[in-house]
Length: 253
Image 1 (tube, helix red, strand yellow):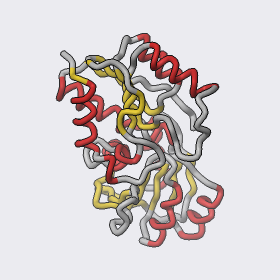
Image 2 (cartoon, helix red, strand yellow):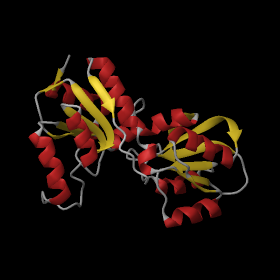
Image 3 (cartoon, one colour):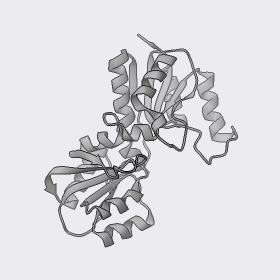
């Protein structure tokens, strides 16, 4: 079975509503390929390795969280960009990419998917007054220690997080933002939340955690954002009867 590129694009756009976000890149179909799609490779980032994996699997489309054409990047088609685009075009592979829309979706988003794996009950957006804010707030069923949360993250994500303890209090409330959302720790601290989880860490994040009493966990940009594209791909497989495979090109960052 297969689906037309146009039908798939319209379905994804209706589902993820990219027009609601002032994003750093175009969301949706970034590189046009063949008209009919039966096999999709999903992944976190449209790297050369992921493209090669899609070619090996004779995929008609790639669906990722991190695509191309970011604001502020050099617009010239040369070097790494040329090599990637050349392979996509030569093999007639469509590239679909959804950045912020895939972070925040209430069913397939990176944030809710990570919460499900870590046993966090989603309550609301961390900053509900800000329509462009992507961080979330939630709670645990039972309080746990910093070490227990670190162990849970390592077991679920397959890597040990960087941990900055914000005191000796247990963790009941949690805020989080997958990827590079470490700056949201300020909002978490202002709301008296026990712990904050993100993918990355900045120098100043450590000081906020220690001085404002928020336990901080940096679990990896890639590691925290595996699950949105994976879940969305599984949905497309079920909805359209497509052949969909998630390919994890591991990244230690």
